Length: 322
Image (tube, rainbow, N blue to C red):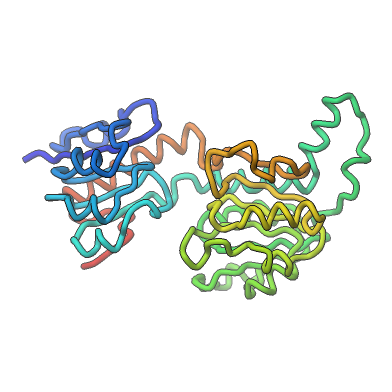
């Protein structure tokens, strides 16, 4: 007996990696890329699927309640915010993601953004392109070894980021993560409250998921706790920062710079106030990207489907219910 896997959307050249994983299993791909433009479209195409793979198409409670035989919903991503996990769980449908496919890439992106704003590289690059061969506009710059680094959340990406950061000899490294239980291998890191982290850190790097608790966690009140002249880096989710409050803090000089790979609204619009501020580096949510990470993501997503349909348990099962 064959299985139907409905792919609602993706932005990869093809599904050859997935077909390779499914080869010889009886799992067949139904490719609806570009067709699931509304909730009604999605229901029409996926209601009879044994598995659903999505990238950006929301799998809402309404979609889930119309599914006839679905066993698993998998997202091409780490985040699961577009899937109604509660509705899936209530209907006995497994949900999976790929939490480890771009750990190296995002850690490197966070490091690049941090170094870029701390050394004001884009500011200086623009000056040189305008014929100004002087470092005066970069003043003041400070040694990283005299700075404190703070990380909000301490999952796989944050831990990889810390490995890189340690090479720059930060004075202290602070972490706030109420869900992480440190052991002796992290004895050189100080685990503190969010308030203490913000007060003590010269650089704050955000690695938390987007939840109701973390939404707008960086706002005018939390920004007020930060050191004057400090920096903020965000490679997690744009929803964690109130951008209007961040722009105000940057314009007033409360913060000296920001490196952002994610924004509240993607794609960016030209009226975004952050575009007017000099020492702000914004990249288009590309931290996850490399040729290698894409290939890894596609194969691991397909493996989640294969494991669920043939073995009953995917490796990255996010809502285990038995």
